[in-house]
Length: 228
Image (tube, rainbow, N blue to C red):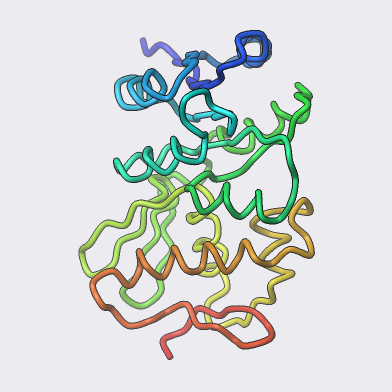
């Protein structure tokens, strides 16, 4: 008889009161939680406990949340990361994404909106055996990993969603508006800079061994997945 294990969310939050509120709401929603109040403990928990999701406050004591996230990614950790932020400028959003975070949530904390975002990242996988293929590139929807010429490519959640959307529409020119709506949702509408950031990251990973470019830029329009 198997025992169902609740997904674990790691909270890297120096504000103890906020951390407690986050933890209580997550537990009521059916998740287990771990709380770290600084970067050192956060990195240790992330590596040892293997949480399903990590929530980081950008205003992390002793180390910015951006630096923490960059360090996490440099260690090869691909766990989905949500960044708690105060400001909502395009510069802040891009800094958050460039650090390797998958998404962000704006303070003040609102439990219903926060849990909705958490569920988006921790919803059960319904494509356990499905794989997408384009040329020598394969995307496994169960593991959220890509494979090219026998080389495994680890992807963050947003990198996976972007590549998945492109591979679901091969050889079809997708506008920036279409990509924003289907990968990032309404929150990012009108701010296509985030797409350029992630296209750059995807190309670095997918073409790491000097392979032929697959993600093509259509100047003034958007992007297309094609051989040339």
